[in-house]
Image 1 (cartoon, rainbow, N blue to C red):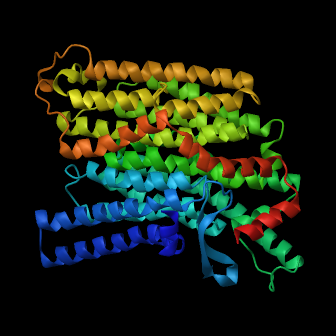
Image 2 (cartoon, rainbow, N blue to C red):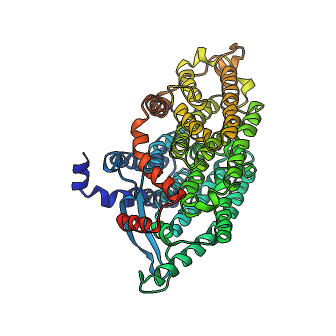
Image 3 (cartoon, one colour):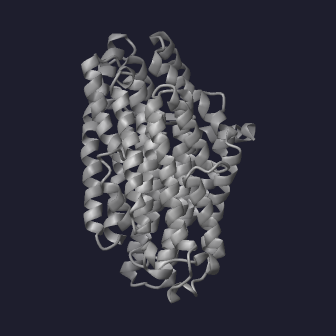
Length: 537
């Protein structure tokens, strides 16, 4: 299969195609909406194009991305399937794409979940349908750009691109407090990102100067390529610390870490279902990905400092416990799952800052498992809200009697969320805790209590929804999941079970890149780093 893919040039065109196809689809959707509006056309045919075109594009994206599984060399540690061309040559900015074992699965999770997420708004979104789906197509380009970028300016461009469509999606199609939630989301993430931009510019000029002094470039201009930054970026201890804080400001808000988390519950509660799925399953992973991709290799001295790394781990562990306790007292089901997202991302932070291969594998698996389970949970919250127009746990009970298929899907997602063996969630939490017991044993023990708390709030919520007496008349005639809803939940639940039973293929593909990252953080000679840059080219 790999030979066939390479024979058709798959390695040259796949990443640019995945990146720009949604953007092209967004333009087509917008232009069609403008044309139809001016022509005075309304009705199902008018809205049907705005639903089917984005859905078709997301299906094509998913099918094309399946080839990444075979085209990617599991033994490779450097970027693969790369493509680079000048973007702003006078400033040393390149449109440079590539994936490794760290970004491969995040890209595939985006292409896997987006067709499913689009189906969630098929009946609930009934106004400005063209604009809604066009914004999600732009959002997709931004998310994929972050995970594919090999240039720091390009990384920042797509990082910021994500903010605009998500701000509009929450602010226009969200709940009663949508403007407050959208503004809070935008301000938190945008202000943190400004510090990151300053740090990126500083690094680019330092790298450019170093490469010019070494005779590697004919002109003294900045250079923002990841590989060059890792090979030629040599800041002093003070410089590294302040630059680390600049990136930390952006990534900690996005994860989100305590105390930068307050925007997330509001954004989740007010966002439409598709927006909540993207927020929990993908956007939060941009923060943890930034920590892995940028802060660990560029600032190893800061990360390995006797207290800096531990402070970040403490923030992650506090987030695990604190937000789990808040989730325990929530009556709004969507807000409960939103707080559980903050708690789960604390495990990813623990795994990342242990800076061990096992811990980083655990962090990656936690991100992927949470992406699937949280997506399923938010989808099912949306399904129930469409039927009952309420998210209060006290308004339900006994739904397993009238919605048995729904109850089965909910149990699978719940068991993965609390890390029951045999589900995807267990793999990530087990590896994270195993990786943390060596470097930070006491903090890892404290983090383990978060697993118990998650079982408490998740199982209690499930009990109040699908078990307990069926004593409310409104619930006795609720329809079970239909074919469209089953088509959304079956693939996610199948992946949760399959990877929970057999995670080896994923671990095998991410291990070389993560081991190389651990070597970089703990110290690799400069000559070796330079040779790896040349190998990547």
